[in-house]
Length: 62
Image 1 (cartoon, rainbow, N blue to C red):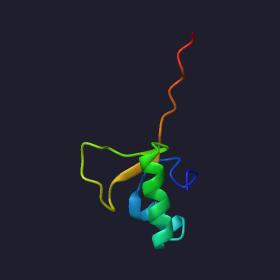
Image 2 (cartoon, rainbow, N blue to C red):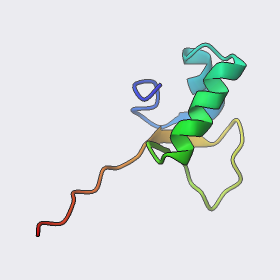
Image 3 (cartoon, rainbow, N blue to C red):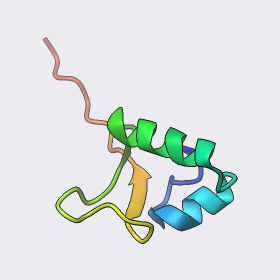
Image 4 (cartoon, rainbow, N blue to C red):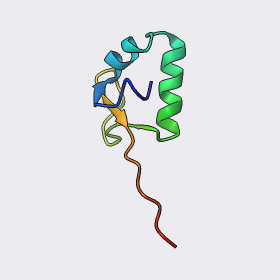
């Protein structure tokens, strides 16, 4: 699923690429919750929301 959303893609299109079943939707929401996928959180989440992989921030050096 992370590969499907490497480039920003509407939620519904990404789910179609991943099987479009209930299980795919559950995995998508789990990845959003874990912040491995991201969307514009200031907008309501819908089937047209653009989803993409989260930007990995480097950990600060100690």
